Image (tube, rainbow, N blue to C red):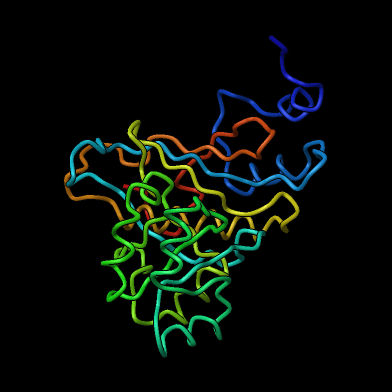
Length: 236
């Protein structure tokens, strides 16, 4: 089995695995690391003091990052009539109803990143649950993707709205931008995400909520962050 690449070793060399850094310091390490052959994503991994097996400890939500995520987002909308036109004018990539559901179900078409639906279309969309659900593509009113305001929902998704959901191990993974972003843009995006997750703390969560926070690029090492330096909301 091949070991770490030369580039990874160079990126990891200045990182002290036993130290926690401020978010600004971690971003500086990322920006100074050797470049990959592509514009790497920058991702936060957050270990939360919750047990997702209990419904009252689920942490899930969505927010629009101040500076987007640095990639184009393909958005489809399930809507009819005036709402179909509204979605098209807002920049949706594909808009449809039963025909769109049939394309997904029968042809296995999944060339999109986000799905939005008006409430009256959920009877149709609901039949796609086994296809869209496991991929995190199912429209959900809690995430603002089941709504009558489809124009606003499309614009939010296109401008960099991200979703977060705690996994079985109590970890949240979310991309907060690209390595090519300005340092302040990465700091502000990461801070916004941490603020949202802190505000979403379940009442049933006891003890330390933000147990561990790391930032990394697609091909780089994890850098531990001191949560108290990364958020505008006081860590609980």
